[in-house]
Image (cartoon, rainbow, N blue to C red; front, side, top):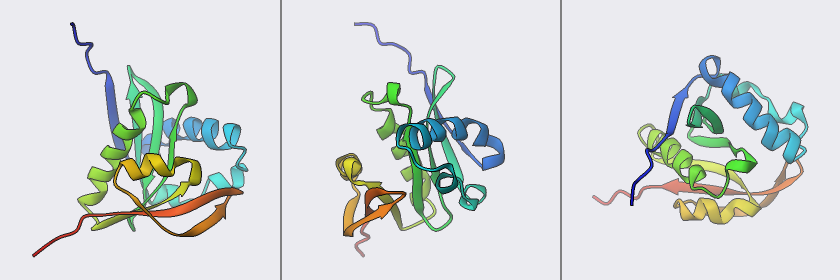
Length: 147
């Protein structure tokens, strides 16, 4: 069996460098697909975050951001790219980067995606809450250090 070459790459950088790739993905997923008002999608945190963009054969298909306090957010994968394991690859990259800087990572997961994040090692905490009119739960990823 011949293996196909891996054409997936993930870049990270600031908004000035990667925002032009992140914006159309987030618009397609959050604004168009999930009907989140643009005023709730775009915030000043974009200018302080590390952004990640997943490319396959040079096409930008997914994005996420890591805030300076260890919060992961705005995880989005274009609809026609889901179900191929690309979301896990993107998140592993974000998590690897984040765990070099923080002892724990936190995110607000839409409740339909809890299983996705649990598979990555995140644990749900607290009660369900609404964010942009969508049910969420806080999830935490931490590595226990035993001395």
